[in-house]
Image 1 (tube, rainbow, N blue to C red):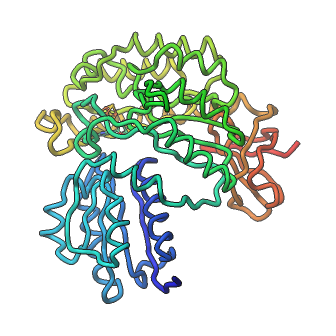
Image 2 (cartoon, rainbow, N blue to C red):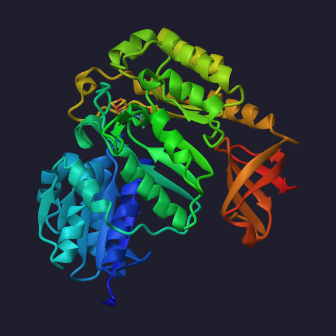
Amino acid sequence: MPSNKKFYIRTFGCQMNVYDSDKMKDIFLSHNINQTDDFQNADYVVLNTCHIREKATEKTFSDLGKIHKKGKEDQKVIVAGCVAQAEGELIQKRAPYVDLVIGPQSIQSLNKFLDKNNLPKTSITEFDVIEKFDTLNHIKTNTSNKSAFVTIQEGCDKFCHFCVVPYTRGSEYSRTVKEISDEVKSLIDQGVVEFTLLGQNVNAYHGLDTQGQSNNLASLINSISLIDGVERITYSTSHPVNMTDDLIFLHGENSKLMPYLHLPVQSGSDKVLKLMNRKHTRDYYFEIIEKVRKVKPDIALSSDFIIGFPGETDKDFEDTIDLIERVKYMNSYSFKYSPRPGTPAADREEIDQVILNERLKITQDLLNEQQIEYNNQFVKKTVQVLIDGAGKHSGQIKGKSQFNQSVALQGEKEIIGQIIPVQIKEVLTHSLLGEKI
Ligand code: 5AD
Ligand code: SF4
């Protein structure tokens, strides 16, 4: 049935939120409601929020205020994601014009309400991840991209003391091998060739196969790599304690597995790692890095760092810098510690903000330097680039190398979607310039 209705969706935060937003898009499209970039004239506005760091709740309320002021009459406003999960009641109280509040494990309820063409004023924050995927498995996927995210695992049982994820996404859940393979196949039918397998603790994956046997991530990757049409596989985000030997060895054995590993360490100090409840030491992390580099010497490594965790002294910070200098990353993310309501670290005394900002700058400068150094090795070398769209400048196209580097080059739009060899000519701060060979 044709419809003139439109939805607008804005996504904050991690790749898992991007995946959930794509699924909400699929739900709207399956009800013949089309996407628009103009929130003022949309019939449905969705904010898919993130609660991981800093003033997330305030930002949500300020965005909601703008939407409420400028949006058209009868517009339905939906708040999804981790702020919805954590602050559902507060949202209903402070922004009573919001229609639906849905947590990350309840996005499927949107489907039910659109079926009935009735969006009630309610808040749904159940952790019903089984129902979530049962519903999503039956909704048609829509993409024109060559690279896609596939959530294979949700939630986290690790309870790092700084992190809200175990509270907003709930405990660990793994989808079955069949569900994941079916989703991969349906994406291949739409032209996807590169797959990023997602999970808050992706390498804790333990989904069942059709024989009822539990499969770990290494075995899942092997099964997916056998599906016709799959060219590249990567996974994110991993925890060091779940880096099993078979997963490490797979990097040397499975040619579809991209030579890239995002393995957050958070801190280089054993004392801080303990305070963070990370369940591993710095030496354990070094051991994994050594093993991975042994089987795949050119693997690109990336990490997350939290700077200024309560109790971090100058010596602890020096240990973090020392770890970065020893590992040498291709790119990494460093964040200022931000106390999250309800987490064990939230009540601990914060460190001086001036010192924290200085440490953050030192870390980011070093990580940027390492990224440039890493990329400089590629000048005159050839990488395989999956071309995914037009570049910033005229006549330019861009894509991603197998090492997860952004690469721009001159080329015709017709080769968008292909994996082509590109010779690197120049290194910019966060990307590379190359030439088709
Ligand atoms: N403060 C700062 N950074 C955080 N992260 C998670 N929680 C916090 C917090 N409270 C960072 C971690 C994690 C990344 C996704 O976000 O580095 O790996
Ligand atoms: Fe958060 Fe730690 Fe779980 Fe990662 S492993 S999601 S940082 S609690």
